[in-house]
Image 1: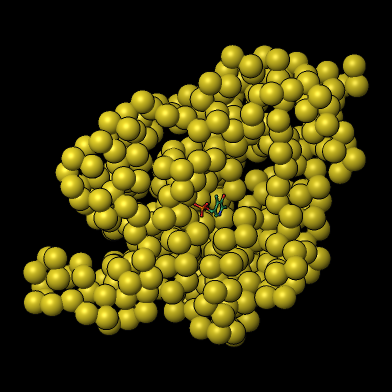
Image 2: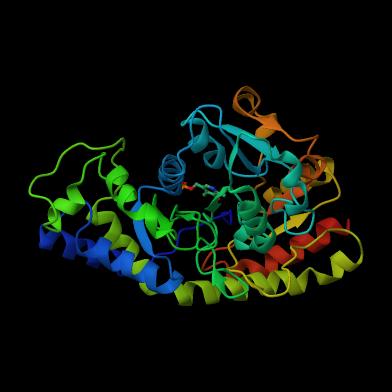
Length: 376
Ligand SMILES: *Cc1c(COP(=O)(O)O)cnc(C)c1O
């Protein structure tokens, strides 16, 4: 079976973990964590970067920093991973789900304004497949209504919006290094802080609500509990693993882009024949080939597609169950309208294997896909 995903290893992960072990600093914020922070700050231009256990953890920090109180509303897509909404619900916030654009499958910026109420506190755009949302329009709305912007850039490492890295377009940006993402530490993430006024509180929240970081810098003579928080920082062993991946992040992205382009070129003909729709990358956006997906005509066609590929030894997957239709989404959130695009897309989307090493199987995958959709 050709797997849907296979995490890539650079070969240096265990070497760096051995170094971390030899350093004797195993808890968080040691030398490898600092290397990862510096890399993220240099590559994104964020005022500060902080590693977390996951993008979920970064989102939880972000909603604390945005001072979401019970009953406050946040606008986000329903077509996303649960963490975008769950991190908010943990603060007592109410997810207000808005529909997505049919081209990029990102939050439809033209529908945000109608969802704003006096309780709206923030907008949380999700850069689906590492392709940027229309951040110009979203930031203009946020300024006009004085809203916080938290980017779910879980899929967006090394992508940009007209030259500006994803995760640096809002007040806060959240990245994921889960094993299904482009660069990985198994589980992992980072919070990018673009509004420098939030940095000090972010340090405290990440260190169990203490001013431990100020203490280590010699700014205070003891450290103590001063705010809410949790343990959001990963161990040095995780940072050492991640550092090996960061060192190769450009090469990894380049190889993923090449794989993505091979699929994209190969499927141009079946798109022209009206059998599938391919991903759309708007002009001026650099994406990171996080994902290759196809849109099939309907749910029955997608079910048959996944079964046919499985029979040919190729594992393909779909997502997301729209959050507004999920049990917790109905309990904790509300939708603005019927979200027709979200419902339609979630029935039709299928993701193809895209990982370093899939190249040797790609011709076979492409032939199987084309033969199946042409019914031959
Ligand atoms: C992967 C993902 C997350 C969660 O990331 P974790 O690091 O697994 O917590 C959140 N949002 C989106 C859009 C994702 O793709």
